[in-house]
Amino acid sequence: MSPRRNPVIGIAAATLGVAAGVAAGIAADRAGRHRAAMEALETPELLDITPDEEHVVLTDDGVPLHAEIDLPADAAAREAADGTTRHGRPEELPTVVLTHGYCLSLRCWVYQRRALKEAGYRVVSWDQRGHGRSGRGERDSYTIDRLGQDLHAVITELVPDGDVVLVGHSMGGMTMLALGEHQPQFVLERVVGAGFIATSAGGLMLANGGRVATFGRLLLERLGPGVLGSLAERPAVVSRVRRVARDLEHFMVEQNSFASPVPRSVVRYTADILLSTPLDVINDYLRTFDGFDKRPALLEFRHAVVLVFNGREDILTPPSHSELIVEGIPGAEHIVVNDAGHVIMLEHPDLLNAHLVQLVDQSARARAEQIEVDRQPRVRRIVTDVAKNRRQRRLEQEAAELARSRRGKRTRTKGA
Image (cartoon, rainbow, N blue to C red; front, side, top):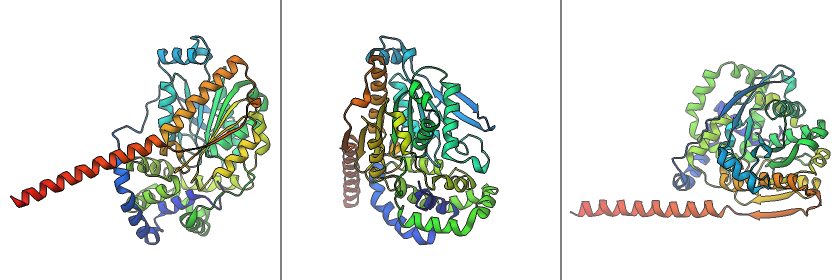
């Protein structure tokens, strides 16, 4: 997530509306090519989730962090405990803590929260400072190290005892590494599993986001934080611009977040999350990615069951970044997903859900049976979301048949 090669910057440029003339033709072409696939994948499924509990965690520098807890049904928890050799003792199951990435919020985990809850696990998700419903910090507090302290505060208050499985996407995975670097004993004693989703430990240049990201970066460098801060104080202006540039906005989000067709509602949902992040917060976080390198902290997770999961077409944190994480953690499993981009939890939710449930199951079992996971062999697999591809083809065929049927009816009506 380099500040100089960040696709989110391109998205922010769309928010300002100045790229409309440059990219409108590209957007129209891409929208035409993907419209059928996006419409075919559309479902009536709701994208929001109502938590069982809402909390505010106050950090030691006075920032209120918004957090939500999802509780499993008693029957689901008992079944999970039986399946992980806990013998019907749900209170011994690990709690899953989900940490989102840069410019996102806890809303991005909607599918994973449902799946983990249904699998019988307690889930804590939270908004990083300056994101979602959490409060803002001072400008110099927008650092990965500070986020690691925030994560520690969330766990200490909402999961005061028991095992924990940490899952972080993008900047959320970096936050986990900051926790490991500064609280190694805490991680050793409490963390039994870790999921690093589309993230980086540093040590490599992050990928160039392409022409949209490059244009956006140059634009924001010219505008500077003064203009961003001024716009942040005039949300009505930004909202009006966003309404005018809505189609372009969705195109930019789709281009930089996904590598396969997703429902249009998911694109809108992702755009609303990304573009709800205040512009000055976006700018203030950029400095923390310069020179980011927490590879030594990877070893703090060697005792845990580790899943490294990313998309093959991720332009922000490509597989090479995940490979460095795997190299630094003995026994880690690396899953690379074909036709997947950076916001993989919304693009291939069922696939990620299955692997996360398996991660938590294995983490609980490893702790119960005292398995030395760092002696397990590293595993790397390249997979395809076959179920999604099949569903897409079936729905597209059904849509095509319906269209042919309607055309046939119109032809017969004219003939009569």
